[in-house]
Length: 104
Length: 179
Image 1 (tube, rainbow over the protein chains, first blue to last red):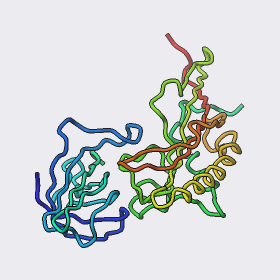
Image 2 (image 1 turned 90 degrees about the vertical axis):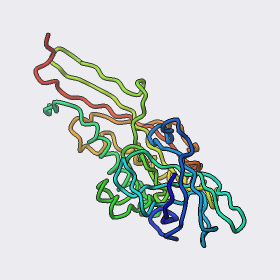
Image 3 (image 1 turned 180 degrees about the vertical axis):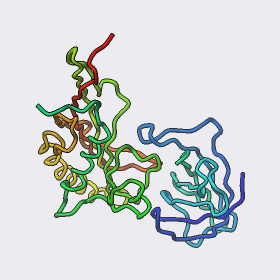
């Protein structure tokens, strides 16, 4: 589990928010999953906002870049894609299920 | 009789397919595929989202997009030696997959995928040897494949069309068949 901030892109390539504080933790420990006819290996993560609901709330398909930590396999900023409906807890926080592609 | 190459050129054949789709699969006179970012245009050597292979990190900013890919299917490929002199023949069946976004308006996506399909068919059917630019390619032909279909990527459903573009290559094994 890590505490960090993320940049939000919607669609990928267009930044709509930056500096969003979040907590990120692994959502499964059973190895990589496969998608797109096995071409797209990914790991699953839960992402929780830690300072309320962002000004522009997160939503499915958003791309989130970790502003502090690199992906150890690419040495590039870790990149997460929101893959399910984001749960919003009133004005408290949001919870998003994300995928991070393994490698580059 | 032209001199045969000493090996097949599968990537070259896929690049020829990519080039034909980029240049000739047009809707209202322009390529309907999404423009790539400057970084990706440099990485892939193309300006629009017509990829060789299925991108590992699927970018939904690149829609519509096309993927020309080879499936993990031994039935889709064949290879044989045609004689002691060493002439060889092989066939591969590439899948041409078109994807469009149907999140905001499924009916617009339906029209879009049909327009793309109609623009693609003439390109696939017109070229008997992928434009004649790859020395090993002796013939190409198409079939429907999955046709209109759906694909789910990263939890999102896309409207798709898939055709099969089959390519025959021939080459000369240097020195012929030996013990």
